[in-house]
Length: 478
Image (cartoon, rainbow, N blue to C red; front, top):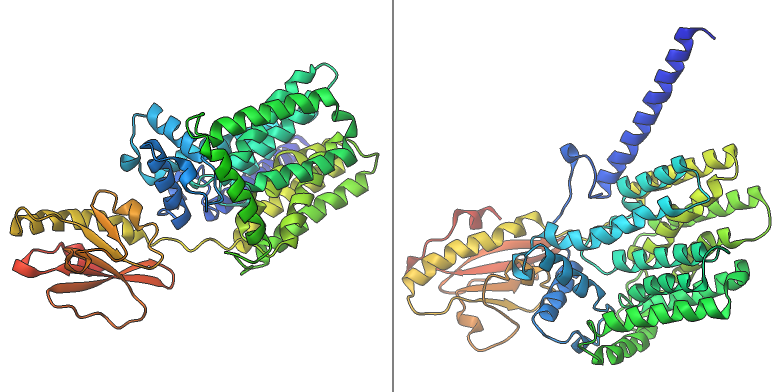
């Protein structure tokens, strides 16, 4: 082969790598990856309803409201505690936190997930870097890595718990190293009661594939670490002991939801479930082709499959449930498979790339909040100034009547807001009513504007026009 032919081959290989990186990057943009190319970045969207609820709970907790009062919720206080620490370190208050400020908190934990492949001692560095790149640019085949919800913390805790458990099992590690693994699991338990089920699946997986790691000393150290961190976070750093009772309420209520008897989210799009299922099936196929005896290296893949089947069997379906199986498979399962030979490396790396890109077309995104909602607070602030000049001494407030109004509380946090029926609601300077159809309400003294909140969900905004108060121009542009 001539010199020019070698240069041509090297050039073609470089173009292929660059093309592959561009493909994954574009896929990451579609998935709202927070580290995608700024030129074509579409992140961040407006707060999702669940994010706004978490903001409200964290804000109340920072103001001294016991988190344990929310016994009907499935979320623990871990995100609230982490948000208080991060925002305090940045000198921010919850009322002043933007969407990006809030999402920085879970994104820091997502970076921990992306760092996990670098600590696989048995895996070559190129494979570690490739796994981390896929996690970052493809948002782990999900779009949850930077949303202000509990899942990034839960998954970060569980991924690192599994990694540290396997890493601590080596003969050169003392038994107390399992303490760190337990601490990571404790973080997951303080996020959602679902982590208890994941721990049960992990125990079964270890019994089948890594029974030798389950010595009484190591289990004892791990249990100690889990209990200390879990209880600390669940009681908001030992200030709210009722939080343990709240966790019990959440745990028992979870059975009703998981069985489909209460607040169950039915499957609306099976595409993403098929994609994750085929990806895990491909990894299982690669493992069978590799052959060999069962070992601790099989734990991440077996656990990912077990968690996937667990959620597949239950009627409660939401894509967020698959975040753990996806991250386990991308951080550890395929890198550990790839180290066994050239064919296994090529097949597993190709499957991982194809999976991340395929998710961009199969994952059904949550119903997005309309971007125009971000202008509502500015418009109301201008209207408030004009209204108070025309009505000196009278309080300015907003009345919201019924409906699934989240995330309005976040975007109206600068105003005095009343929800539902209360004295004075019908005389409020600004009233927000659910739009059940296209028939615009006609109420004397108010001008009406449409406020689309989400897909198939809209409100009517009623603005007081007594005394000919000036109304901002943007109200007419909704």
